Length: 267
Ligand code: DGL
Image (cartoon, rainbow, N blue to C red):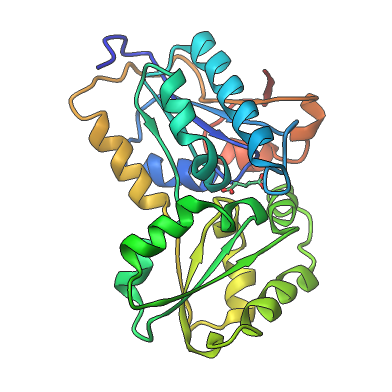
């Protein structure tokens, strides 16, 4: 248990997707000091190899934990979690919370028994996802689709830029071309960036298809792990730190300010 009340929670993602976890966390732990780290120099993870992602995520989190002494780290990224969670847990000496595709809650919610799962190219091929399917979706049909481009679309949207409707339509068309897809009533948003595109996804999949993501569950898990710990009032705004050039955060000013972050900083 952390005995330093100023020790932050470290939220880590390749980009702004983890802000969907941050938003959920704020609802359950409004006072906790947070450092949000976006690996913009490594974005997107979804098109990288397992070895590249594991080395990058474990290396960065090791350096970040040493620098900031967080009380807990959350890998707010499905791609990084399904590949590197075990390795990061071996490296860090604090609790590490991962973000994995919300197959369990989706399986509990589906009425039709057919679930769509939208993730990055790297996430949908992970054995971790096979295991979740075996464990929690027995007797259900789980149709997985990769959504290249959606991570960048979410990044652009948060910077105030338009989302290309063809990207969203492409994901819909590839998923609905699969056998049995007409019965999908539940869509797992298996990338923390995708809830930022919930409106665009609802527009093509229809309001009858419910979206499920892990953000609220992860926030509850973090709050549970930190139960009983004290939080010193933060001396300033929460910190938003990016790898690579600071220019990568240009356009995010409004999204950061509205969430109580200060100006973006370079790692
Ligand atoms: N937010 C990350 C995830 O949950 C995006 C990965 C990427 O950078 O491609 O998968």
